[in-house]
Length: 615
Image 1 (cartoon, rainbow, N blue to C red):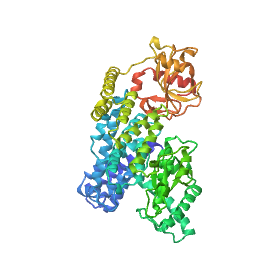
Image 2 (cartoon, rainbow, N blue to C red):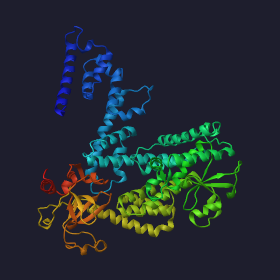
Image 3 (cartoon, rainbow, N blue to C red):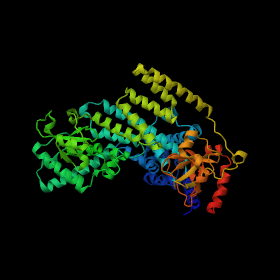
Image 4 (tube, rainbow, N blue to C red):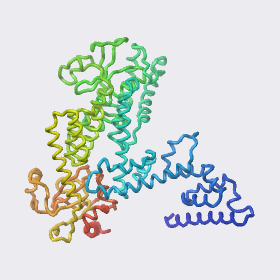
């Protein structure tokens, strides 16, 4: 059925209902809408073709209909569930709720959120959104769940449209979730040791680094419980009276003599049956550090596999302690029922190598060197989290890309939550933000904190403060968009337009153009490194800013770009910053990019017609 026919039917339905209302109000003969039982009226008012404004209008006609719509609450509850199905899970079945108020509040918040989201492109097109840029959304002071649900509704809209709105919705959602997670992590760290669970801290790190992924502690625990049940299932078949079968995850441990049997079955289920293993082929992939990915891919690095292994072992009544062994995280299992301080009284378990058990001496073979006795000691939950975050920090340093910079930012945020006064990492954070040219005001705050913690840093701090103030001054001078027109004489050599999907002749990557210069505008050092002077047309040819499919941003010479014969969507996180829609052959520039390149839309249409033989 066409959209126009659907709209006509809905309009006819509304008119019919309003006519019934008029009949019921006017003739007084007991007919019309007013004569219907309240249960029937509820069903009518829950008709999807009626909008909320229609229901409000109906409520205003008479007291009886107002009572049906609002007093009984069923109508607004059903309409709430129809419009925002994700929200219903947050309401208890037995709870008493004013569904009219809930509907009205959710609707109002949604309208406010969209208004704020739509303002972001005009305000922050030329710069990174600063922390204070999110104050408007925080100032709503309403239920976080309502705001989050509206942002998710925007993100789940038509995949090829509303790209700019989705881009800023994603930024806002990341910010709000990370703010909430940071607060939760601080509460976790300040809680008494006996109330802490390692898996909870590990999940918080995972969630902070992946704020758009639907990961929850409850879901992770369910997956680990499922593996535990698989182990218990095998134990029931082989040793039906084994105490691990009835063990709970409350910290009650079974007799030492029976622990080995439980660990043998755990190894069999985890590594043979479920095929978990150490990710030797892609060891330095950050995904190995996130427990939700480890459980999904069944691959990880030593520390995350140790977390999974020890959590399941605890569910079975076996106590294993984390050991921050150099270069290879381990677990230790005491061979003395009463416990021991002697490292020789422990077996060390390598969860990366299928639960292999080693003596203290054999552990040295893992890294090929002798290790001091203190490295065989167990460590605290906070120590484990430090090591995980440090791993992520070093992974972020491995390459210079947008993804690695974001990983560095996340890792530094987490590290400084664990150690707020660590001057070395505070300085690293300040230098990173300065290097990226984002949030210079935050750089000044960090430097002020460093000076307060360690006054001896005043020389370095003073120098970086001066550079940051100069950076702020330069940004203020270049805040205005530089308008570039194809009709200007100096731009006559520009062959391509923003929005075109291109392919690089030499490197073969797919990309979309989001900016151009009449000649190479980079410095001499960059041109030497990239061999620009070796190109046939050298630096005196147009150069294009492109977003690349691999997530990088590059600056490509015109002679190296070709029309892409099979144009595709470019999976780059910054696409929505510049474009509002993907049309199958090209991207449509958003309002801000069109303001910067006012002639490109006409050229784009001509080029698309010429290259792809259709608009």
